[in-house]
Image (cartoon, rainbow, N blue to C red; front, side, top):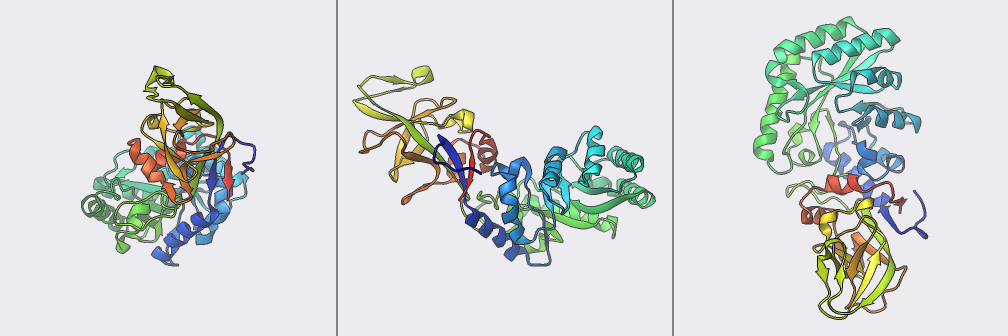
Length: 371
């Protein structure tokens, strides 16, 4: 995190809102449930090093990442709790994963044998979790063939120095189609777990949306993600507190006559004498290009339209109806300014994507500032 007094654009991260979202999860699932906050993609773009101490408010069991390098980074910055790599990894990275005491996810028997061979070579216990494919389709052991692979995993893990610490599945539509898809996936998962008897370790299947929909699905653990970071989880869940604000400074103010064209493709042309403010942010910072001629920024607590196409490094807003806009003023692309607010999900909906993509798309050129 850095001070924002001399930067052109930045992301503010509210530690209080982040903490309250985390505590909302803990309150919902109870003290006995293990929480595994997902901190992949640099804590969904917020900055993992700064968010980790705040996530400790929910007394997490461990943390979830997507890559071995992300897991190793957590170890380098002092994380000692379990770290689960929730995506399949190349076999060549198993040594690095075991040396960092990371828990790998297995989706097939070849991966299990690779883990065993690596564990024997290094003389290190290999921790793993099993993903059950109950409908997501991208990874995991097929729930329909659990009687085949389950027995092999059980026997091989008993024979070798590897430890089966958990079993989970991924919901594909729990935020929009919970009553049919998520319940069906849950039934498939529980059928697989019954077949595995007591060998499955900690069971977990709920993401952010599912946590708030069906208490009986909470099981032994949950994996909250987007709700922690301020994204909404469907109409049935509580509103997450907004965690980030995206700000940019006015770097130039121009008075232009009518019929002045603007930006690549000249997609905007002034219809009268207008006043334009150039903001120091663009798609090189992760601002979605589709906001051109459709999005807004907040200046002086007022919505002003983004005009012309988004450039890599700048955007232009029409401030003709505002008085006194000057170079150095701060505009808000996501967040509050006085009584006006542009939410993360509002921006995502406007550009026809999801809040996850907006957050993780904000590039490293934007400093993250804890407020």
